[in-house]
Length: 260
Length: 159
Image (cartoon, rainbow over the protein chains, first blue to last red):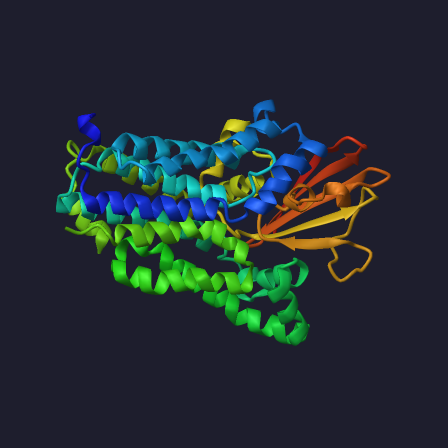
């Protein structure tokens, strides 16, 4: 048996498996939509923009890289470091390709999945370690990945249209947010909703600003406040946003398992 | 503070991967922190959303920069080449979008909603801190495909 794969410390295996599970849950959360979209819609009625190179316009490329992460299930069969490393590479490359593909580039699922995949690539190369330094670095880098993703969201909302609630209110009023969104729109007048969104929007901006500071906040605070905040975002957007957030939530939970 | 604790224990020789990862994250974080103040970076990130950041490799690099729900984004459409961005006008169809406003055309299970009997002018509009970017496209549809052709970019600043 390969020495590199033998006897990986249990905390690191547990951490990696928790992360991969959440990552896959987020990736395939919209599986039904992508089954229709990637295998019927973009094939039957292609959308063509010359901005994208031919490789990133190919329906077969999108299909292949969307399904490729199924191979990472091997990490649950055998806890080999090689398997974890290959899984991380597959997760990261698949995310990166779909982040650049004409038909999927807009979905933030592939952006957060990419960053978590990068973290796992690094983590998988160190999985033989169980020293405190490694655990400290792993947790700090995880918080940096979470912080960076929310920093990006935060700075882009530092504009009057978000602070006064107009941007989020317009999106909520004009987009189809399913059954819950429809019921909320039916239960309240537009004037009342726009008034509420003045405060909801401020809360979102402040909450993202807090999560952007994750690397310098206590880990438990980020977990116990940040994860409910992320879950709360779905109330004002759509449950599908968990496809974006599951990998980040999983990363936060997974690194909490890193202890001797 | 986890980051401070990690940096104290960091040995660049032994923890080279950690060091490289921190440098990468720090560079992108610095880029993002300049967004509210730099018109160049605002233009880059808005152009990313409008699919006009050339060359493609530059757009690909920008795609790795987190930017969820950035800016106020809208998509307008009209059969006429001229349009007023008057949201109160019922004759000016429009939608507010979280990001990548062009996605309202293609990112759907049924693209037939974007099929029209004549070419359609699409206007993507993003605003941020007094800066506005409007990109126009021409959408033509055939029984086999939707084709989007870039037309023009218009940039405006209130400052």
